[in-house]
Image (cartoon, rainbow, N blue to C red):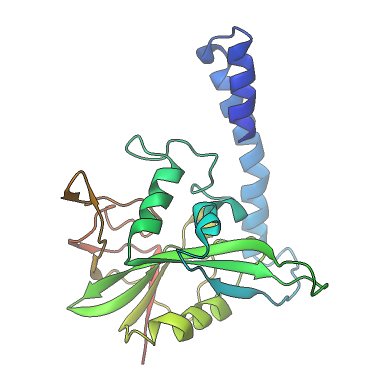
Length: 238
């Protein structure tokens, strides 16, 4: 968002976009470097973290419209509303709108309770995902656990399993773990590639949507069977 504001101000002052594009790229690389190093040290256990209680809240797409529209703004990731173009000429707002419209997709907020019961909770992260099929059996597919305060996602994964995956009779719970949402996955999760068919039930100009953008990255295609890679983890639900 800050980059957009500064670029707009410079353009209004008569500067050509090409004259300062490299400056912004270098500035962003300097910002991203320390963030990457911090996450790396955190994963290696060199930064101490404290345990805290968080709330996992399922978002109702009708009652929580604003929360759904701004879901990517609670943690650093490519679904942040500042990303105006992320893939195929579409920005984060376009892909989130599709996520909201699709009845086979879902969203969760990760919230920190306030010490004052009269105050609202603080939104510190999110999870979203969709449903799929493996050998004709339903699976729940999570895009990732996006929350800088959560390094070990075990309890969040267990909560989603109890709240959603088991209730729909899912055979497996699948979760991506890539840079913005990269976590140390529980030992019962495997990253062995599997073939799944991701489901999406929306159309565009009368034709079924065939593409998707998220960290599960099954060739960014839906309604066809594709193989996961080693950054996508899963566990059998007994």
